[in-house]
Length: 301
Image 1 (cartoon, rainbow, N blue to C red):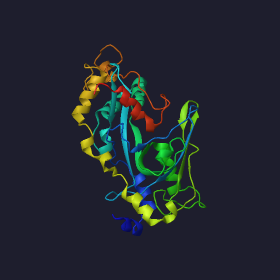
Image 2: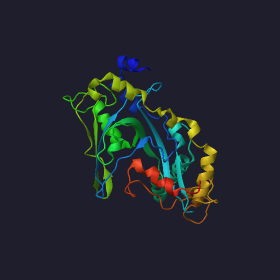
Image 3: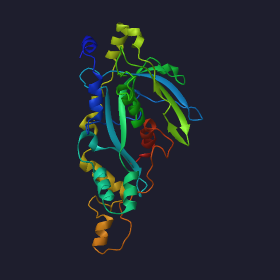
Image 4: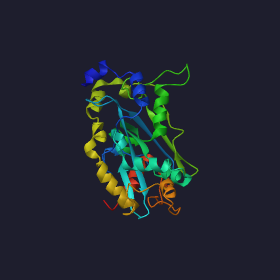
């Protein structure tokens, strides 16, 4: 789609809402933890941060202005880390998902707790223009990739599909009638909090200057790489990795605790129980920072 075609055929909000509400769908991340295209907010010593972003429309050849994907990140009893994208992001079976399903259905609360701690995590990726970045002003004016989790996506949905009759729906990805997003980060009870983040009033980006808008449009990053199967390990590769992280004896075919009881084996924690799972909240990190942190720890690959 050319810039002129974009101007003529601006995406209807209802299509974006329907896509966001649709179950399933592909999404993934090409693993490049030093990707300079990816912008991350800066926070001060108190954990507070501020920036203004403008979410941008879908690039030429793509239907949606975002992609989503899931991943897993936890440390096994071997001391090794499992840090991988989930194949469920591209509509395929995933070994951790299958393991978690068996744990959840074993009939034991401790198995459920393990499944909770190693559950998949949801991420979104969009193109964004950095309007203001007080902590790193050199980023201002750049078209970047911005990764975030469900809380910020819920704010996007709130403006596209407002709850009250006196609120007009806004497509925040639109050049002409979108809105700047004021990212406000606070540290609340030890966790990074985005509750005060909000959209400004609807306005045209760059006052509708088409030469500038076309330049921005031509600089959009193609998000299709994030849901390209070639950027994911195969099921067998992930299964092998998971077995290594959990311990060589812990094959994916290991019986559940309930099965062990039924076979009159001594009641004991199954060998595939995962030790020291780490969440973004426990590490005082946002979804934006989690993968970078894990990358430093995943030395076994």
